[in-house]
Image 1 (cartoon, helix red, strand yellow):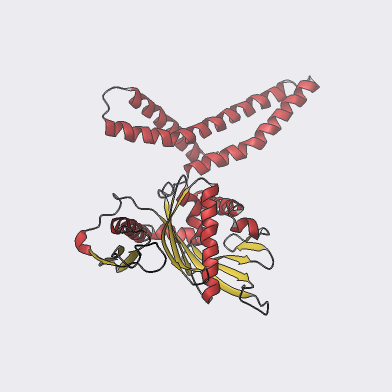
Image 2 (tube, one colour):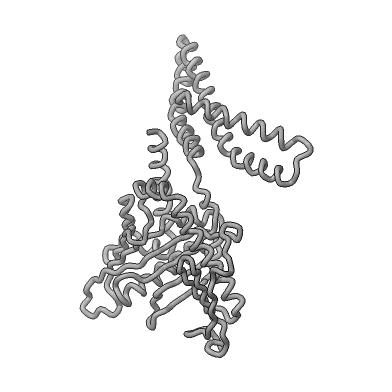
Length: 360
């Protein structure tokens, strides 16, 4: 491995040893202990990888020496040479794992997410497809053991969704779903199409890292809060109490409406949650514009104007255009079962691009 990289690995191993000593010493206050513990925990898998790599390098050196020293014993020499080959084959994978562990991490990967799905071009068929996508993510969340909470839903008359918003909570939610942002296109014969003609329509997906209270400070003076009576399905209290809430963030013009709960208090809390997340996303985009440009060159920007995936029902295929991946298992993708295959490929492509940039 490169000398500069070896030096960096030495620094990481030394730093973990320093942290171990510091954590064992007396006198640390709670804040410092928590901070050092987190750093130690973050370094632990990296150091484990470094140690596995260096142990394999030492074993390879010893096996190569044995192969040379046993030239007069064909059987031992053969065994030693087989071990050398096995260890040499294993080294590239261990080196790759160490390099991947050193890549800068997206600080938002550990966050939960707000999922927003909206009907795009294509009229009622686009709304029906938006509903299908929303249910796909709901099933995928269930398969991964995530909590999926509906925040906002605007339905059409025949089962389509104009707009649907959900909060998804669990392990690695944003890390897994962040590549889903963009335009999803569908090609299929609508149920309402008598002639059997294939229609093309689209829906947009936005996956936003969920903001915590400490991330975004919102002044009350920057908000206009209106209450009104809920409309549409929702139980006996609909249209009888002013439970729906509309919050307008005056500096940005962002508007969030919540009316699914019967309680005005709950609707306001949900609306603030969505507003806080959308404001955090605006800050995140401004702060990370350079990284966003890098990401666009790697796996697509995730901008809603960009078509990222096509679902072709007559041919039974799903194609992700960013990585030229096609799966002929559209039914399993739509039930969430095969979505991991696409997500894994996108994560791998992102890592490979970052590695290439780091090595450049």
